[in-house]
Length: 84
Image (cartoon, rainbow, N blue to C red):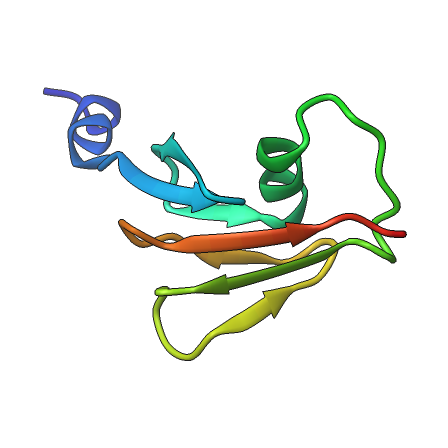
């Protein structure tokens, strides 16, 4: 088994909730931009006015800002609010 195959076997898919909808996620982290894309696929958005908050992660509830990422955990909940 190669190192790449071993790493692929260790990749665990988790279920995250984005705006009440479940999504399977196979990466260890998720970015602000990826969460917004899951919430509003293919739609343009204002990164400065859009908010992403999460709960049930590692540690206290927090917000994600453009360019940031967070380590995902099974059952993690993301709430995305578009700019007005």
